[in-house]
Image 1 (spheres, rainbow, N blue to C red):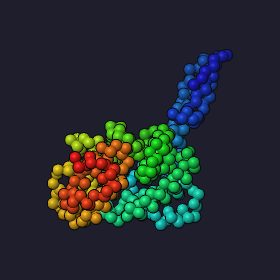
Image 2: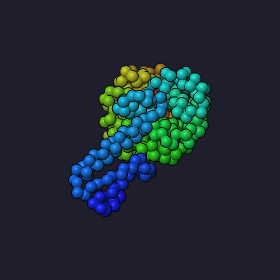
Image 3: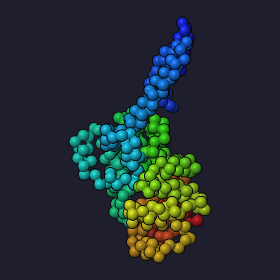
Image 4: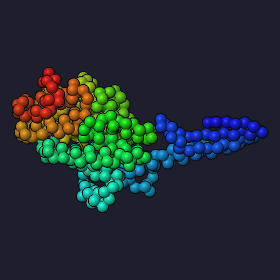
Length: 357
């Protein structure tokens, strides 16, 4: 704010800025009469209303993109924005055919391109861990995501929603873009403040660096803001459970956090089983029904489950110890039933001998 007094008036200019970029969002000029106290009240009310209007507009702009209808109420838009970026959202998987047509019709549209990438991401996540996608197909899909997202980056700098989508995808494919994903997500988060759509990726980026306490704060905030029992709520609880597991603090691991996801009717059975094997202590005997399934899928299916867990939850961790903490339980249970030859060699190279300890 700046002030200039003279001739019974106080001129004031108030500048509303976005932080930390300091981008000017709106400027107010106040004409204050030093002899009339009501002029201060009137101008203060006008500025307050103007700030509220500017903040509302900023939230509307932040939730633009990824097919969000522009005519919906702000609260509805923000709720949809959060669910659109959740890994639990199966909409992207179910609408791949339409997204493919949209992509062909408008190949230069960055919004549509990122929607297509979220479809590809969903294909990798919403699949049976027991071997539906080969390593070669995974590599091909992730290479397409990599090239597409990088190409889109210059076009999405003004759109926080698309920036968060890009950061999420770059984080997931783990092609050496962690610094870039952090930069994009941090700048998007600065423009959205306490925006539920940003919380999962912000937590995962802290998780990757091994800052597990910070990650937990983001996940807890997401759990608090999401509707109990919703897919997003369960997704955030599972992310928190994996983060606690990666930290090595098994004594504090709340089995109910992962159990809620396994018991959810919306959680695919094979994924729920894999989560259970991951969470179970290496020395713990699996429940009979769970052990029977792990035995029935054979060494190949068990090896595929290890690959799935590694690609979705472990490879992003900078620390070898943390990667091993995530993988140790499943590897122990698979080794007990199928022998060490069932463990993919590249996973063992990534976690060293720590997992066997």
